[in-house]
Amino acid sequence: MSSFYSKSVKDTVELGNKLGSKLSKGKVVAYFGPMGMGKTAFTHGLAEGLGIDEKNVSSPTFALVHEYKGKENKLYHFDMYRISTWDDLYSTGYFDYLDAEEILAVEWSENIENALPEDCIKVIFSPGENENERNIEIIGVDLL
Image (cartoon, rainbow, N blue to C red; front, top):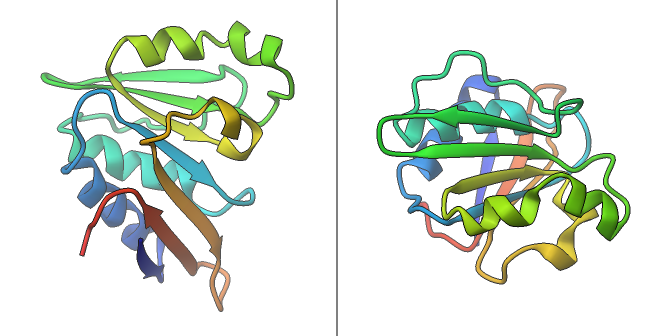
């Protein structure tokens, strides 16, 4: 487990970038933590680290999944906030995306924890001391 303290959105994006540069195809990055903790900013950095030039990374709250394409990688960004049953989860196409062997970033993973791959990378966000600061723990890959 690696622990980081983000003092700004910029720090959070940079940490996502660092993780993205280490990912291989087929990895699932599972986000845990309350609303407003920087999960979408982290995903923006993750996309950059994967070589995806996407300026409009946004929360897929209403679309459930956004797809970002680079020359070598695809990133599927899920929002599982409204998922509460297995039928809900199946309706997102999540399992089909897992089979595609691309990279998945999954917000609100606590809602689908039993459906996450055992080897997923967990990113846990929690509030820091000040309004824009965050504690970010990464489990499943060493970034230090």
